[in-house]
Amino acid sequence: MRTTPRDAAPATGHPVLRAAGLSRVFTGRAGEVTALSEASLTVAAGELVVVRGPSGAGKTTLLNLLGGLDRPTAGTVHVGERELTALREDKVLELRRTELSYIFQSFGLVPVLSAAENVEVPLRLLRTDPAERERRVAHALGLVGLEGHARQRPYELSGGQQQRVGIARALVTEPSLLLADEPTGQLDSATAARIMDLLGELIHQRGLAAVVSTHDPLMVARADRVLEIHDGHLSEPAARGHAPDPLQAAARPVAPVTTEDTAPASAPAEEPQPEPLTRAELRRRRQRP
Ligand SMILES: Nc1ncnc2c1ncn2[C@@H]1O[C@H](COP(=O)(O)OP(=O)(O)OP(=O)(O)O)[C@@H](O)[C@H]1O
Image (cartoon, rainbow, N blue to C red; front, side, top):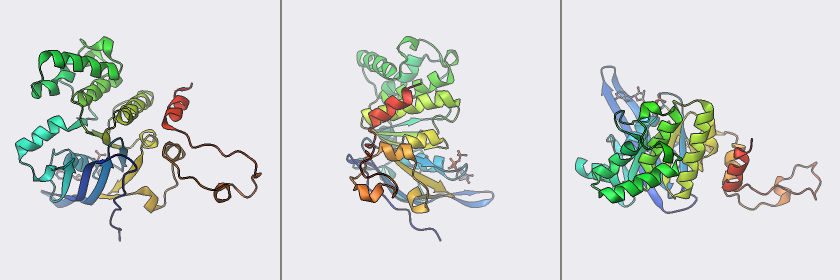
C-alpha cells in the first residue's frame, strides 16, 4: 500500500503554489484512467521543484492542473492567495496571463513571428503599451542571451535558441510561478545542459517558484527539491529509500553537523571537512572545461 505523499515544507520564501489532494480521472473508451491520485505539494518563491517519473506516470497531467490548463476531478490549487480551481474560465485565463507562465517541450513558438514578436505575444494579450513592450522584450531576450537574434524566425534558430525564446516569453510578464513540462526533452544533451543551467539560474535569481517535469538527471541535480511520480502517485524520493544525489545535496543548505557524525572511522580527526558548496560555486565548477 502506498503512503499518502508527504507535503514537505519549502525551505525558503513564501508559498506561491499550493496544491492539495489533486486527482484527475479521465473517462475514455477503455474506461476510467486515474492519471493523478491525491497529489499535494507546496512550492515557495525562489524554489525549483523537479517532478520526475516514467512515461505515462502523470507529469503532464499534474502540470496542466497546476497551470489551470485542465480541471481536477478532486482537490484544490492555490496560486498566491487565489484558488485557481474555484475560478471561472475567464479569471483562470487572467491569472495565467499575469501570475504564471509555461515552458513547453516543443517550444510552442508561432512560426511566422520573429523571436521578438513571439516574446511580445503575452504582453500584447495584456495590452501593455508599445514602448513598455519594446523595453521588456529587449530585456527578456537579453536575459537568455539572444539580443542579436530578435528578428529571426523560429526556423532560423537552433533548438536551444528556440527554447531560449520560449524562456524569454515565459519571463517577459514577470510571473511568480513557472511551470515547465520536459523543457529539454527535444534537445541534445550539451544544449539541454546549457538550457537547464540558464533556467535554474533565472529561477533562483528572479525568485520564481518553479515546477519542472523531466526525465533528465542533470535537471534533477539543479533542483532544490525532487518529487517522484509513479502511476499518478506523487511522493518524495527520500521516503522511497533513494540515495541522495551528491550535486543536489551540495546545492542545498546543510544543517551543521559534528565531525563525529560524519567522518568515516578511519579518517584522521584533523582532516579538513569540505564546506557545503554554494549554488554560485556549483555553477562556476560546472562551467569549467
Ligand atoms: N485526455 C486523456 N484521456 C485519457 N487518458 C489520458 C488523457 N491524458 C492522459 N491520460 C492518461 O493519463 C496517464 C498519465 O498521462 P501523462 O500524459 O500525464 O503522463 P506523463 O508522465 O506526462 O507521460 P510522458 O512522460 O510520456 O509525457 C497516462 O496513462 C495517459 O494515458
